[in-house]
Each structure stands twice: as structure tokens, then as C-alpha cells.
Image 1 (cartoon, one colour):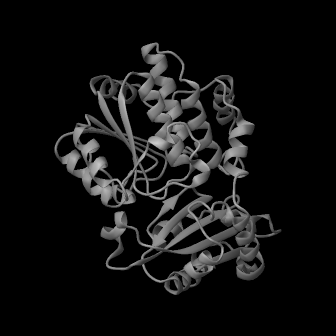
Image 2: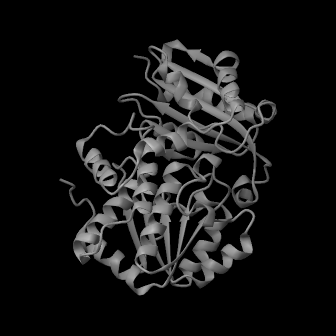
Image 3: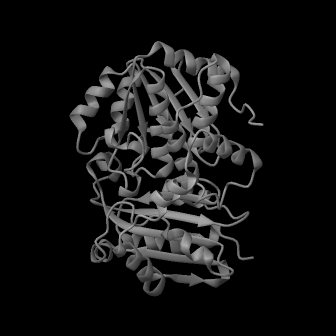
Length: 365
């Protein structure tokens, strides 16, 4: 049985806010991954089912392997469609944020969102990352926050919210497009259910989504079996030439410069999953992957003048958290076993930062 994890009073407030709104904007975080896309597009599809006008806005481009998702081609990309996105925000009656709770996570789009919040517009925040009080959307009468840090994905929380609204209001079941988006988010944010997924209720939700018509094999194939040959060569290069092992701390470390990425014709999404590869090695329990990138226009306010940033991803196994290091060292966060952050500066600086700090956070035994 699927339990109600969201307080009834909160569900009632969300449903009232949705009912009273006609134009709704859904936002998700920078460099959207499967859960960001799944939760935002799943919410979009369900809201369309309720007769609402809905626009999803993403700060920058999402990976090609997620472009097949229902509604993805209708997203506005703030980096290249700023005027249209600003107009959508200005016209919205309600703003829904999925898979993030801190405005800085959407770059300059966050500044525009906060302008609408200060103007009194309703905001719903749906997330599974721990909130930092001084960074999140401030508490206010028109703000509704659903943050379940124990949940492995924002897509699962969106499912739970829709499920509870259906029970409350006697609505029809979600449609197949909604279910497909939410399943995709759940699958990708757990590494195809290989971490943060060891509890029975998740599979009851998966079972419900499959009953609604989700073809889980087709979703897996679309996400994980649609890469270019250059990506496979990049993965081989990472493992053969770039992986460093620190056996005392059961840690693997890989980092790539922009020049190296260019050599393999890197595109958004090509780095997906590389951080997980070293965990297949016996006695490796921590993995860190860094890649150098340029600061995009939506991040200028965060970059403090730097034109270069480094994306950091960390993974771990068992009772070995990586989110604490990501939060305290790289201004990020995430799950206990799957987290990330950014460094606005050079790759050598980020590498040195990792090497100086990982022994403080990673276990020897």
C-alpha cells in the first residue's frame, strides 16, 4: 500500500492553488538531469490533464537522450529564449519548482522567479534535497514547500502528491505521458534502482506506473542505449588514462579538461554515468568525477567573474555519505550516496580542493 507522506493540509493547499490558477510555469534546475526533466514534465502533463495552460522553463539545454520525453520539445530554454521565458513568468498565476529549493540553482532565472515571488505570486516547491534556510525561497503565505529529504527522487514526490490529490478530489488516474515522465525520473535518479532504492514502497509505485502503461524496457533503452560512439571512447579514456585510485580511502577520482572533452566531441549528457563506473571495482566505495566547462549566461551571477566552472559528481556505496563533502566543499548537495556541486574557477583549483579535503570526509575502513 502506498502511504500518504505529505500532510493532508499541504495537499489541500496545493490543490486549491492549482484550481485557482490558469497559467502555470514549472521550473527545474540547471543542467537538467533525468529527475529534473521527469518531475517537471510529469507535473506539466498532469496539469494539462486538469485543463491548465502550462509552460516548463529550464535554465539551459538538457541532454539529447532525454529529448524523447513527452513534452520535452515544448520546454523553453532560458539561456536562448529569455524574452519568451520572462513573459511566461510574468503572465503566470502559479510557479512550481521541482527538484530544487534554492533559487541560485537556476542561475539568473532564479532572480526572475524571486521577482515574481516578491510581487505576491504563489510558489510551490517540490524537492528531495535538504533545505538551507538562508538560501531557500523564504517562508510566506503564498509559498507551499514539499521537501522530503528521505525520498530518492523529486519525481517520486510528484507522484505522491498527484496520488494524494486524486484521493482527496476523486480525480481520474494520471495519464500515460505523466506516468512515463515520473518513471523516467525515478529510474535515472536511482541509477536504474541501484542506489537509494531499497524499500518496498518504491516498487509499489513502479508497479502502479507500469499498470498505467509505462513500458519500462523502452524507457531504459531510450535513456541508456542511445549514446554516440564518441561517448564510449570517452568512457574508455577515463578508465584507462584518467582514473586515479586511492586504495587507503577506497576512492577513485577522474577529472577531464575542456580540451579532453573536445577531443571526444563532447555534448551535453555524454558524462552521464561516468562517475558510477569505478564503483564496479572491488573495494572502491567512493567515486568523484570532475569536468571543466564554461560558465553559461544563466550562471554569470554565481560565477564571481570566472568564465570557467567545474562540475563535480560524487557517488558512494553503503553507509558512506558524499553529500556532506559536496555541500561543505563544493556548495552543492544531494543524496547520501549520490551528490554533486560546482567550483567556479579552474580545474586545477577544483582538483586541489578535492585532494585536500576528501580524507576528512571519506572513511578508511
